[in-house]
Amino acid sequence: MRPKPSSENPASLEPVRAVIPPHIQVHYVPASDVVSFFEASRCHPFAIICFDQDTSFLAQESPCPVVSLNLPQLGGPPVAEVWTCAPPSTYRNIDGISFAMTEQILFGLLEIGESHELSLETLAFSAYRRLLALTRTMGYSHLLRIWNYFPDINACPAGLSRYQQFCIGRHEAFADGQPDFKKLLPAGTAVGTRSGPLQIYFLAGTTPVTHIENPRQVNAYDYPSIYGPRSPSFARATLRQSEYREHLFIAGTASIEGHMSRHVGDLEKQTVETIHNLQALIDHAHQLHAADNGRGDWQGLFKVYLRHPDAVSTVRSILKQHLPSQTQIVYLEGEICRSELLLEIEGILQYQVQ
Ligand code: 3EB
Image: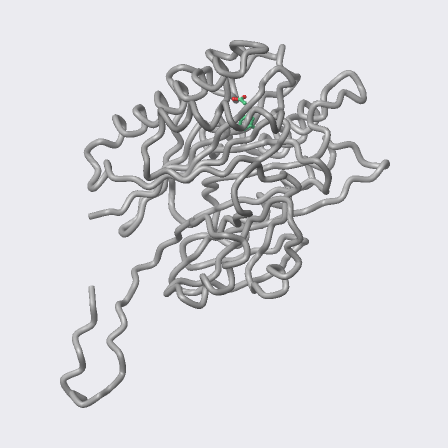
């Protein structure tokens, strides 16, 4: 909707600016163009995520949270993932969490360096306690997406893998005083970086969202204990509906059917299985919410995490055949949480509401 030109002041030379309804949007932007992208955009900085490059200039020039992950980008000019919002957000830092917030939605970032004194389990527990406390205190109690990164995810220092230790701490923090927490878990990602602290960034909102599971997979929070003493705390996807733009946040998805890893040692088959899982999840989400307006036309942004950088050409050629042409994909070198898995794919589908 455009505001009508003011009839009291017909001679005004003020440009008539469209009033943009509140929304967030995600873009992949060449890292070198981020500053000019904001200058040209009618939207405002909400968050920036960078991969494997010197991003200090972005952190200095951007008022919003900037996440810098050591996940080397494979191929193509370096991109940054840029989140914009309208109206402008405010930026704060409370209890070591830096965040941007609009009236409806909050993007938060926690980074905690590991030390010898604290186990990853304890670190994850305290990080999630803080995350949950902040979102509740600030009134953004509906979690809609969480990303988790830390190095050496497959290392097994004490019987359990670091990923399993992380899962225990995260699970305990969610379960604390919240017996029904499983139904509230949002879509997630947990990927191993090459180096860096424990990095957790997340989105939370003031209104309820819909969590969706994958008909081809056992819900991750119901995995049997062979995968670890505490199950992973995430949903397969989370749908956020709003007036102007809707988002389907798709969790990290791998070659897992039921709860078992499939096609161990076979990159091509793992890729095809992962695509089946993504397709089943997206179809399921659209079936559940088919009556809603405007669903159909989506723009997709995907991240593909590859354990071995030389897998990129094979995976790229398979994905090209299966994903619609309007999708954008960034390939990153990262470690998948089960050591036999070679790739994981996550995505954000953005729907323009009619
Ligand atoms: C899986 O489906 C693969 O622990 O937050 C994917 C997405 C995976 C999120 C997490 C783990 C997580 O179990 C691994």
